[in-house]
Length: 287
Length: 162
Image 1 (cartoon, rainbow over the protein chains, first blue to last red):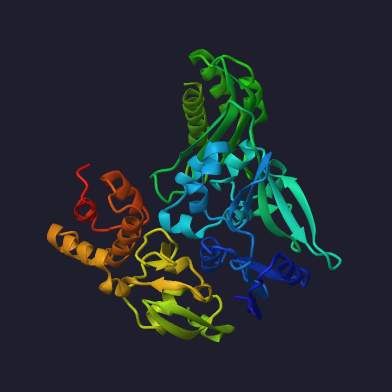
Image 2 (image 1 turned 180 degrees about the vertical axis):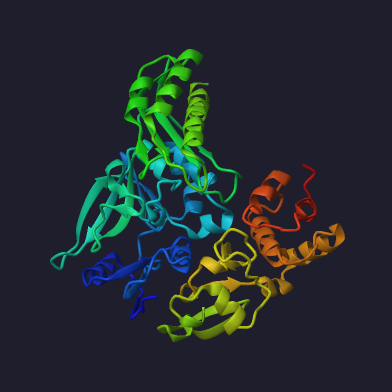
């Protein structure tokens, strides 16, 4: 194991960015993924361990007019208990409810779940459906610079994102959906608590006269990154959601994914579960 | 774990079961090791070491967390309560009596974590029904699988009939 030479506890984004600018930093937030990954030998500490848990202003959910701003240190419990999230992003409340256990929801953060970049990360599918963006801060020339990246483009592979090592994920921006927007999340694992998703499905759209428009579909754990399912979206857009249409959309979903065999399920099983789960979410929102 | 002994350390101050403590801990050590090996509070158990079983549950600023996933240095400035700290707690007196009354203990290894999880639940929802109790204990595994009696015990304290 590599040696940790410095332990830093910045109090502000500016201080954290200064530390990141020096390079070779492992960022610690809730710790629920980091501790396990280091113990399992999948991650090695860099020379600086930076605990961002005390950085001011990074925890909490605020209403910013046309969008919600969710600080990176907002815990999964905070998401689950938020009236703002329940009102504007039901799908994220549902995912927070299906997330691990009480103990892990109390410690784990939304920024950590995103930064861990697991294709099975439970907040990621909802965030794709909600057209969320991540806000990154860095200090390239002595002053803070921020940029935002749509979450659907943010992930580049398992554990990999477009965030530079010098950047800190500071917030998630969730645009408020239009009136009539409905959304739901379905996760399948072998037991309800603490299981990593075998597959997950998120669906959102504006429901009118039994049909969805502005359809957004995302799948978890069936590709190297959370997958925005454009073919399934197109198959759903504007169609009256009767049983025959739901079956056809679910068949499109099954064809759209190309999962792998792993310890949690075979590729064949995942395709079956995507089809089944897609039917379930379509029936749920069309009711 | 022994490799941690050579690691960079940091002195931290926090409140443990109502009393202030000061301790020097390796920066990547988890809170469970600190509690059990540095502070000799062995009521908090090491089960899986990866947050699946809940045997190491503690209260951090009133919320239950897995000590095995928490960096010990992150206890700095916080209020930590372990199962030993529940000895002076009124809700826990009722819980302990109910666990005995209902026979909610088999091998007893999960009991400290169950107590902490139940205490955290009842602080938030004093009248929790059986479904809420099951959700509140979802992060805790009993390998004797004595769940029904554990739920019965918590339900006796919350006074639920449902």
